[in-house]
Length: 355
Ligand code: KG4
Ligand code: ZN
Image (cartoon, rainbow, N blue to C red; front, side, top):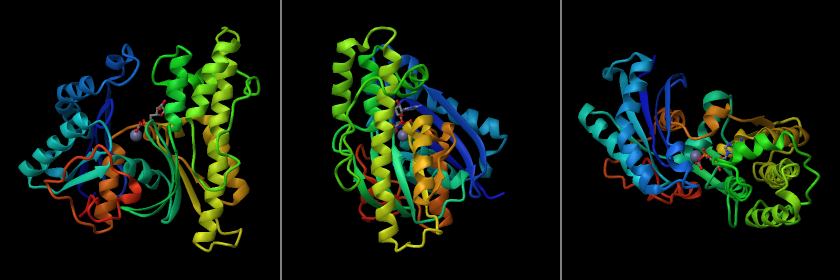
């Protein structure tokens, strides 16, 4: 067994620690969710999140180490989310990781949270570089080419809200508790997706740019115009879910064609990889839509298991493993946490985790 990497994730409302080895074996995956502390405020409150991370982080790391039944001397590196995210939480995670790395004489990896989402599928599936990535989370909706650790090319991103935000904001309008996405999905199971005629923003435009803020507005209107009746709400949930799925499928189709052209993969029997990742990738209708699209376009479709799509620390430890396996350097200990840290700017050395 290669030495273990301790990963720490604190960028939003989950305090998480995981142990992963360089071959991708998961030895521990601890997650302490703060959802009950934020639920009554209707959203994540940054100050509450930061304090909760401070209260929980030691216990979560100790639990991961105890679960794996390992000694501190079995650790080979410490990794933490260094952004993007709520800065209070990111500071808690990175300070803890740096202190541990300094005390134990181990290398420290400052990991981009989005890179964690991007690379997770390589831990669970045989995905090769370069691959196409649809990254859909609460704060981001992007389509990128992943050429290697730290090497991302942006094909398109949302111009306004993220897909997860469209779920979350619509759920709030509909009086559903957070997190909105899973609650909309649950309610939509009893609904007819063709009942409400919601828009599919951008789908007649070329390229991979997305837009979801108009959908939320359309849901508010539909809610006021009959959708709030108990018998209609499941239909509205199903219609919203289908509209988001259709937009993502449409944008991914353009991306697949651009990818084939950019990498000169013309033979239809050569199947490049497409990965969907981030919290919204847990949605079954979206997964199914993308899987069907991939089949039609001759791509191999991969989605990490649901528990690794939503925020976790396995993906942070694994991203560090990718850097180590690629022979890339660790991060300097004075690497400053970044509230904003676009993946497409990772290859710029001034942004790189491995600079
Ligand atoms: O990646 P993630 O756990 O956290 C961020 O980095 O943002 O993504 C959270 C987002 C939230 O917007 C949540 O509503 C959405 O993912 N989500 C879902 C589902 N599970 C989580 N959206 C739709 N369907 C789901 N099953
Ligand atoms: Zn995330």
